Image (cartoon, rainbow, N blue to C red; front, side, top):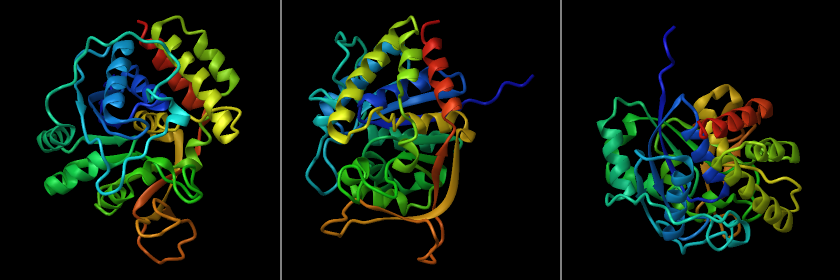
Length: 314
């Protein structure tokens, strides 16, 4: 029996509770080759998101995967963070020791460019935070565009969660998102329409709490905090683990149903900055440019997450 080829991914993230679980899913699944973890300001300031990424690596036992610091500011606008959701550290809840793993000296943007150019066109970029690093890489070295296999983005949707029109990741740096969405690279978008289906219910939380290893305990503690803030801020009984959907799709694309639609990024509107205009009914007549994820197979998704967390204890 021929073993399936591992999918090579670079996770570009701003940990973040759901970012952390996304990293653990990648680390605990045999069908993923985690090429690198790059960080960006988003849920918290860059120094905090980078430290959080190193802490997640410590929990997961990730030794050989480099962590690289990226951009601490959006391309143009003032930085915005989300302490009401993720706490001051960006990953409040679990009490974790300082990591022994160190961040690399190379800048995240340079790493992305180098790895993509040196590849056989088989690297997927998985940005689950603001798109600043990805846009900067595209601007600095356009030669990467033809060599990126796919970009799997957590962001956007037909409604907002940071403003009435805009989802947080896109809103934080919509100018960068516009660069990425207009790049011509194959894009799959995990927007709020999809990620709000990935709810960590009490049943799911119980399954994770019963995993007898550090990764399971860590995620269980993450979800306790995340559940509290999502209830307080959004009135959600169960928190959605947005970013995890991107890695799950990379493992098994059948975990979601997608539709090719036109998506444009609003960067000019006074009230609509950061909006992803998803042309669901084809009214613009523009060529579809994004695979938009619309439906999640919940059972398959959570089985995947639980199995990965169990694997991290072996």
